[in-house]
Figure 1: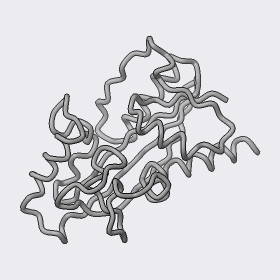
Figure 2: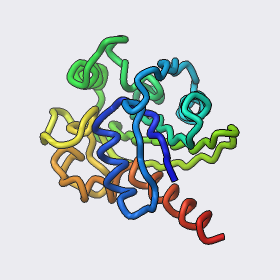
Figure 3: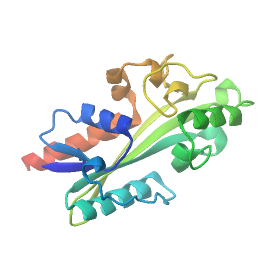
Figure 4: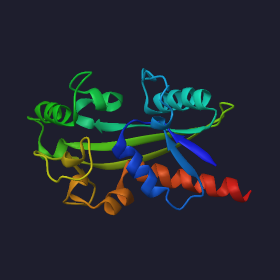
Length: 198
């Protein structure tokens, strides 16, 4: 079975490939389809964006598509950056600019009010447009300075609940076992295994 991963983010692709390594599926990426149109992520929820990407890419490729939308939800910022996580500091912002803006916005927020969570919604869409979604969340807090060199995005600032190291200070396996995307992928893998045995 072929599944197209609906993301251009190479780090996300690596995470998904690691977690799904045991499944009997062939994972393609949108890089395998050079004429793939860009999907505008204009939904106001992670689920809406994931479903939109999955539907459009499944329709374009004729294959099953697995789309991800994920981001950081910070309580002290009323849920921001949320669906705007990748472009928090502007449409062309990179990870560093987004992280610097987050730290500026939280500058006056004390330790006990820096709670946050990473959220991931995966949407599996077949060529007929049938949709299944899977959600994962990782609770934690936002640090004061970036720590660690692994991961991407806000990983150097995010301390998962019960840990004194950021996601960026953890090994790939440690992060996969605790991350929002890891949790969502586990649910997806369970669904795929159940589908193949039913």
